[in-house]
Length: 203
Ligand code: ADP
Ligand code: 5GP
Figure: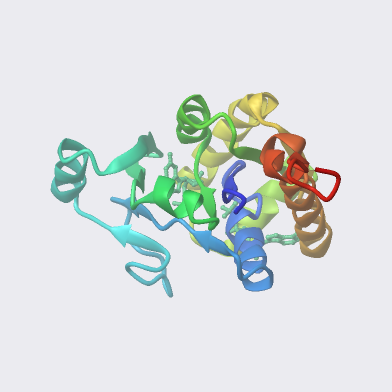
């Protein structure tokens, strides 16, 4: 059986990562979402254990000490981390796992798991990025300014990823990501067992 894909998606805050990931998960039942842990306060509608594991700083520190994270990073004054949660065993069982994490975390994961699929999502423009964050209505002016200021530096780190997708329309971005996943599953390196024709009818 083919090992599952470790899919890592990053992009500046407000680009549409959450929106795109939700659609990918709805359309592709074989892909499982890796629920991150965070110390940030839940946004309206977010559910503990589904969107994030919402932890206090003390609880987050305990998880670090107990080595429960594949990676963790500080983002905008809060901690975010990917629980190990048997990721390796799940990949070996053929499950695809989607991580929606920041650029620091993604580069750490890339060092540990170079065979993962690293996708960077770009906004069509900085103006559009600003209006998407404003439209979401979750940030105060100070936090909006901070996210926009960070966006340019974060986007440069995208040069270290394998693929780039511009989130122009949701549908086009989702279709492009599906195409990436299809191509990745067809890589020779992931299909070595298909080349074993020994024991065929000429012997
Ligand atoms: P992120 O997870 O990257 O911070 P979100 O998924 O929360 O971003 O999206 C930010 C805002 O932009 C949301 O209000 C979302 O509905 C909107 N949005 C996402 N993708 C698009 C798109 N392709 N076109 C227009 N608006 C979008
Ligand atoms: P938000 O607070 O908007 O949900 O997320 C803020 C940032 O934290 C986003 O860039 C998101 O990708 C990132 N993030 C979410 N979960 C994780 C995680 O487990 N690890 C890391 N390193 N970043 C994460």
